[in-house]
Length: 254
Ligand SMILES: [Zn+2]
Ligand SMILES: [Zn+2]
Image (tube, rainbow, N blue to C red):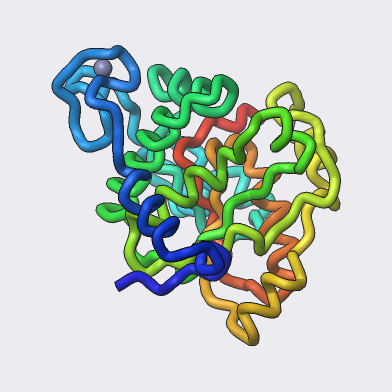
């Protein structure tokens, strides 16, 4: 049995059930190439084989590595504020196209397939699943433009697929709109997200004195600047065991 999640709990039971049962309705054709005969993540054999696993990678920040190391060079110089990272796939062809369609073209089936891939890897590769799952929030303005919050959509499907994790979708809020991170270098990314997040006081009260291990979820992790800023905000609220989760890791190039 899964622990009931906090916010979704306020919705009627039939709506929760409906989400649980429909979130795994995936297309019968490959979400990448359109071929028939697909697996549980709606991928054909060929496209599944084209996905690149993010291994070896830095256990702390998930930076792709040439060979297994306990920490990457960047983490040795500057330890990130999260306890570890899990990003099972590399942000490379053909997964990048799937992410783009999900994030910028409203393709929610692509998102469900990404969440399914994450769940498969997490079940196999995560030693322990944190008690709480918190998506990196989208600013209201961006939500209005896009119509949906991509990290929240992924979090819902991952929550539905993983046992023992509780979804707290409103624990973090974005207090100001930020520029898109994609065009910024590493220093610019850090500056851009500074003071952009806060812990929601109401969500924190609902947790009482509980500060269990927590997974912060974003779609793609590049320098980890956004996830690091969120982890710092959560640490100030008493969450000391924060792990960064992302579907895919892009190399940071700095
Ligand atoms: Zn395919
Ligand atoms: Zn690292």
